[in-house]
Image 1 (spheres, rainbow, N blue to C red):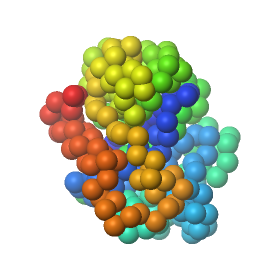
Image 2: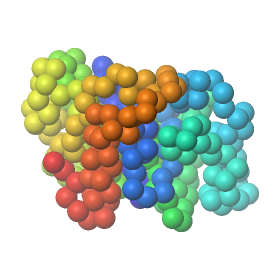
Image 3: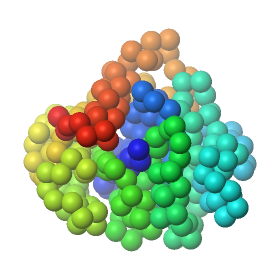
Image 4: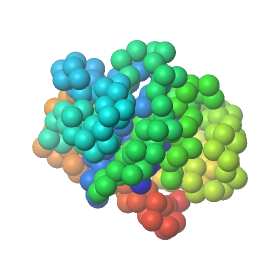
Length: 248
């Protein structure tokens, strides 16, 4: 199962949401940092300490001569016991168009025994990662609940649906609201975007800093509001990918 997560301008961090959900995944999972503008997991969660050859660019080169399973064995890094395995992102802006995203998506789809959550960063029509999103079984638009975030997301959602060839209401593209009721409710945001509501993640800065800043988790981290919310979202996404109703 391949899942893509994107955000709109003015929305909260899609990377934090993707890492939190991946950490609660009920099956084997890989977090792919596919942000076309250059991923920041190395600097955030990894604190700048990351094996130099453990990244997407190296895996893409490996795919010229080996299969995805072997490429991931060489290049995936698990930065902490509480974190999912991560294939770190591109090192700089401008590399995305050179990546064979279609080939990568096909290889990920054939991977045995594991799902992939792709953090695709901020959505842009010409960012180069569209072929990867087209191959996803489910695409999630991560949205905040402030006016600027909702306004931008409502403009991005139709473009995303058109690019992926899905109709309004199709659960293959849904919305995940971070910090609802600030001031708009999740149902209002889903209606504005004309997307099914996947669910919500709460504002939980202390737990979010574990994923975005590499802060050591507290003892009760797994029971934090963010992680409990991520657990619910993970269960819904697995259901969506197996033919269940993943929308709230």
